[in-house]
Structures are given as C-alpha cells and as structure tokens.
Length: 265
Image (cartoon, rainbow, N blue to C red; front, side, top):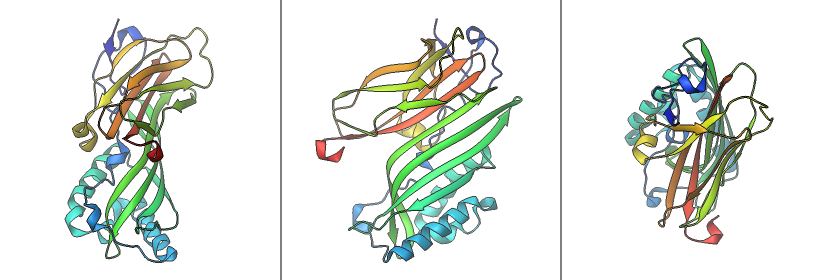
C-alpha cells in the first residue's frame, strides 16, 4: 500500500501515517543561488581577499538576522537572497554555518565548501539537519553576485536513537544515462518495519523551497534502492527521498548535475 507522509507528524505505525510532507523539500542549494550571466564573472583577486570575503560571509550567516549580509551582496540580488534565508531561518533558527575557501580559479570564481547543521522542533519531535555543499562564488566589484552549485545534499532526521545512513548517489551523470539513487542504512534494523519513497523535484519546488508529496512503499531493511534515468538535456536533477520506521524518519535531498561530456563528470 502506498501512502503520502508528513515528516513532521508524530510517528506511531507506518501504516497509519497519512499526510503531506512539509520538510522534504528543504533545498539548501537555493539559499545562495542567484542567476547571473557568465559575462558578469570578475576576479576576486588575491587568495587573502577571497578568504576575507568568505570569512565575513560566514560571520554574517551566523549572526542574528544575518546582520551585515546585505553589505556582501550586489544590490540587485539582495532581496532575492534575503527572502530565501528568512524562509530557512524560520525553520532552523539555530542553524550554524561553516564555510571553507579554496584558491580562486583562473576565471576568478571562488571555490567554497559549505556545511550547515541545525535543529527544529514540531509536535514534540526534534529534527536534526546536516547539509553539505560545494559551490563557486561569482563576484563583481568585491561583492557576491552569484554562485554555481557543484554539489548539494542534505539529511534531515528525527529518531529516538541516531540512525546513520550512507548516500550512494552520484554528483554528476551523463545525459540519458541510468544511475542509482540509494540511501543505505549503515546498521540493519532487524525486524523493524521500514517504508520509503523517492520523488524528483521541479525547479520551482527547489527555488521556492516547496514541500513535495512523497509516496511511501514497504522497503527491505537495508534502505532505499532506486534506478533512475537522467534527462537527455544537460541541467540538474534534484531528488527527495524519505525513509520511515517506528523510531523516526530520515529525509534526504540531493542534487545531481546532468552533463554532456565525460570530461565534465
């Protein structure tokens, strides 16, 4: 039997859970994403300048109300970015951001690693978030004007005991190819009942952080294992997966880049 599930509803038995997923679409890749033309790329300058910029960005992201963030963003992008951050902050007011920076690329883009952790509570359930991104910042006049998201995944979990999972999902695939989307439980659950589902997210759902409905079906104890196909045009696929059992819930989101050439993988 298939069912849709609300990941923030109290969990008792899988067969009795019916609702609408409300955090399954927590797409952290949208928090810093802005649309700019490659013609707008401008060199950051020396490595120390890039480190200073990213250091100020991390400090602003961790400050109350993201104080000082508007001083780091080009004016035409500020409203769009701050709206996304406010949406995220409403869900995870105690989120902590950790940023690491690499050497500027030849075209001036700045490689940045992002780690985000946080918790949120609803209906007496505590949900923990662990998200990871790899991106390249695009700057203009020493301000951030956009970014290219290279890797993006998040894990949102609620359970009485920690449940470790491994994501076996590629960061990039060739157009038209088939590939696996696997969410593997690191420890077997024994006789526990497990259900799960996988759904693709539209660009609008990602951009507006909308929650998808995820259809659940019974799973084996090892996790969720799906074979999917990439589109025949280059771009991005974004997946939301969910695992549910009597002790809690795990929601995963993952971006997969779809490229034309082997050299782009």
